Length: 202
Image (tube, rainbow, N blue to C red; front, side, top):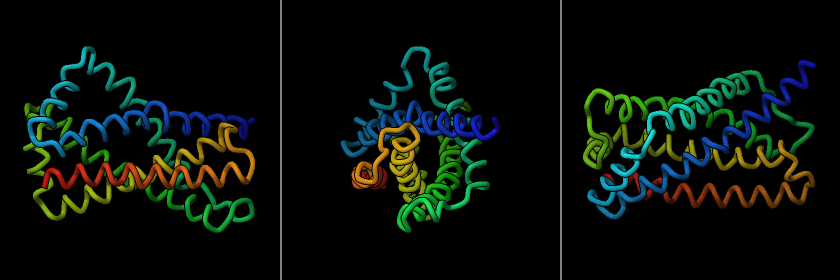
């Protein structure tokens, strides 16, 4: 019974990582990428997101609560999971380990990013181009954001592979190999978008 419960908890954890958390990541990357068009374009995009109706409710129930569940259960998995040496290939076991490591890094990065932006906004700061430019003017913070963004995107892209396996979308070795190439492509594409955005603030 306990094994069945853990199986369903892991499936829910995987689902939440894609819907809605993964979708929010994609939306966040798209909106932030307006920085590549200049301060005015970014500020207009940020203002549009800030002015959405029921924004607080949407953030709490569609972003923060699912993200909190994914993070807490993800930490449990990260510190209790063992590599599936006999089940998967050497490469896939590395991906398994990196998924756990990237999850911890991503959690630290997101917590800090929320503190610097959303919490600061609650105390009256304006989330705009100048705020991000000031944050990224520090070489340490620039390196931290680069590592955090790449880690977050890797965690999402590699998590898509696990999601497809968990939900029975890729059951054959060939389909799992194709999924590996697809998720690597997603990682490279989104990393380009994320890094391009970061350096637009510098």
